[in-house]
Amino acid sequence: MSKKVKKAVLPVAGFGTRFLPATKSSSKEMLPLVDKPLIHYAVEDAIEAGVEQIIFVTGRGKRAIEDYFDISFELEYHLKYQGKEDLIEELRKISDMADFVYIRQKEPKGLGHAVLRAKDVVGDEPFAVILADDVIEAQKSGTAQLVEVYNRYHCSVIGLEVVKPEDVSNYGIVAGKEVEKNLFRLETFVEKPKKEEAPGNTAIIGRYIFTPAIFDELQKTAVGRGGEIQLTDAIASLSKKEVIYGKVLEGNRFDCGSKMGFLKATVEFALKDKQINGEFKNYLHEVIGC
Ligand code: G1P
Image 1: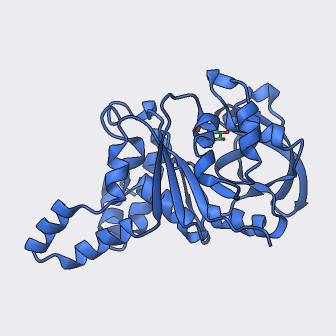
Image 2: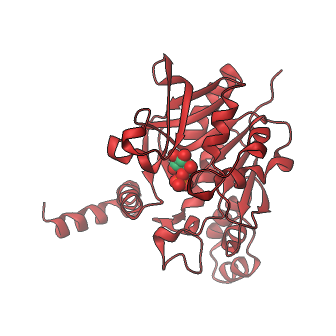
Image 3: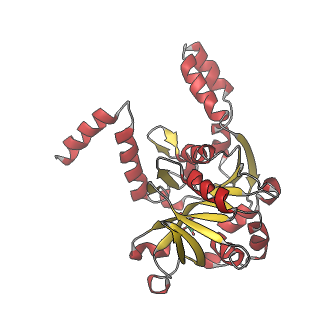
């Protein structure tokens, strides 16, 4: 019987330069959408798919992520003193979400390099990769949608979205044959091509399921676009040996690695927040005047 997806690798070592100076001394993954940091949504995305172990690939200045998923004795002591036991329980749920493992990526050599750092902890198992920048709001989490495909075919599966042709240079772009609605058998993979050179406008978004064979390809992958070891290049070599599927994900995706995407997500999540949505809607009417 084929193994289940129980592990997820979350690369979080990036500098978050698009959010400087906010990210000068803290991690971009800790930027909140209303009251939960981006990284919390990414972990929830994994847990909904049945993942039990979260492997963070971290770097310098990322201690806040470790502290977030740990127990905070001082804070709990303080809340107990204030009689806020319910809040303590809420916070405990965060550290109980999964088994958390931390690996350091000593140098920023790219997404492919970060994923390769998790090789020994993942071992000989299928695993998910989740990029916390991409927040997906859907009935079923992005990772869970991919795991469904993995459980049918036992092949690597990549999350996709059709993007505007002018945006292709921001993404890994793929092409292949549609085998059923929104499910592709992928053949071509290009990391951030120019618009004129792109094989289409179907983009990779930050959700992947891999067979462990990706690690051999990553080990052989040379430095690519931007002087970094690109995960997309390793996927392209893997596709010569194994079938790779791509699934256009259902739901709304927010690119929270960009200011506009982050602001859109903030507005959407605030409008859905039971505590503040009414007041927030009134405020928006006041500001925009409609
Ligand atoms: C990474 C990948 C790219 C993918 C994108 C999705 O790029 O390299 O293939 O399309 O994530 O968000 P990054 O956004 O980290 O530059």
